[in-house]
Length: 105
Image (cartoon, rainbow, N blue to C red):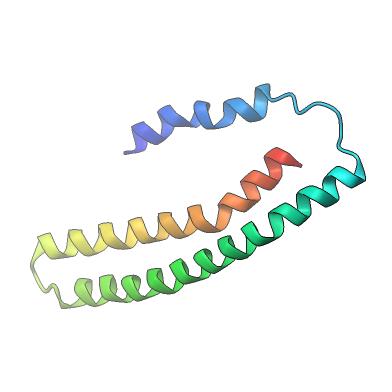
């Protein structure tokens, strides 16, 4: 998995390095863009917070599974992987707007 992430890293950074975003936008265009973006951001915020609540529930479930696994290594590894994927998902959900803002702004 680490090798795949390392291989994809240049592809993720390429637009930021090579991007030519042209002339700055005038205030009227920025205002229109903000009006269009407002409902999209409301939906995104709702999905972000709903996903966070669901992730916390599953993180608690992964913790309970880990604690109650006893000496069963399969359940322990499953609980660890579940917690790892949940944390990675939360990081992606919460950091995505910052990355977009950095690339656009």
